Image 1: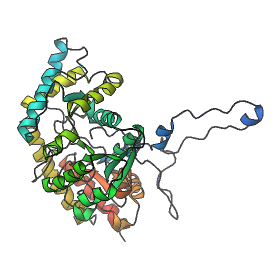
Image 2 (image 1 turned 120 degrees about the vertical axis):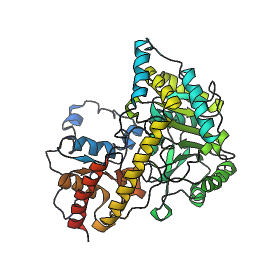
Image 3 (image 1 turned 180 degrees about the vertical axis):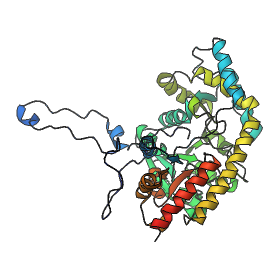
Image 4 (image 1 turned 90 degrees about the vertical axis):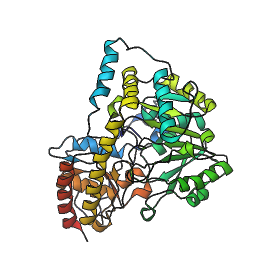
Length: 434
């Protein structure tokens, strides 16, 4: 997904038998005090109803954002937590947005987005993956992939519909499913399988209530990819059980030594798939908040209904920048991917050498090492590492129960920062390794 400012498991860790590792003075660490309601009942006043909806109360706050907020109160912290590139948006893309502003392009666009941008998206997908979409009826420009996922779920789900979600999973998938009225059904993936989703695991999770399979590959947080043969086996299940697929492919351009398989390119899936993608990761455009969704016209029209009332349209200058990115940004993508690959090899080798066993991620810019050698929970490990060595990572529990025992390490940072972080992590692991 594109935004890290989304809900996830943000609960505080148990600290049984150990000294509390988080200073009390850290802002926002303590939960807010409960309101004093003494005397309300005896006064005869009517008790106040719950302010927040059940759905909002059911979702936790963001585990990623929690660590980011604490980190900003500290000095000399090396952040390997928030998932965004350290690269600045390429200059020619910046210039295209600036030019659009001075040309007076500061008004609303069509709800669907600029026709020129939709045409460029269609050309891009046809060129890379041989997947054809009609720019007029099958493509909508969204405010990041986050909005695309939200409107896709709201367009497809009725209350009680089940959504199969492979775990570990991006932090917003399960909360957005809940907010859309659905029920998330997690399906664990395993480190020994490279965290790839297996068709037999999907089959075991399907019930009469299952409607959607939500895929996010290359995967945040594990860096796993799905090979075409694996997707073909999953596709047979999708067709057999009359399911729909939402495929978040925001990291499609960030793969290393393996090709990306675009889900709607698999036979039987195009007519059943909502394809989500955007510009945040490959083009270093996180702050521009621009994504897109592609789907059969009848599904897309339903998504547009939600989009037009919730968002109206995506930011106009960002849309002009995106046209430039698609048409003239390929060299920038290749340059950044080569740098990520160098960082990937450094961080995976370094983590394994210091005792944090790490499979080789083949996509995105995340490593997901095991922390079993320390005996800590992922939350305790992350908190202690932050306060003792000033390195910020994300506890695996933020990505679902299947993520426990791991932490997410983002290598979207400089080689120098990664080397310094590994030195600090090595000290930490030596101190606590069992």
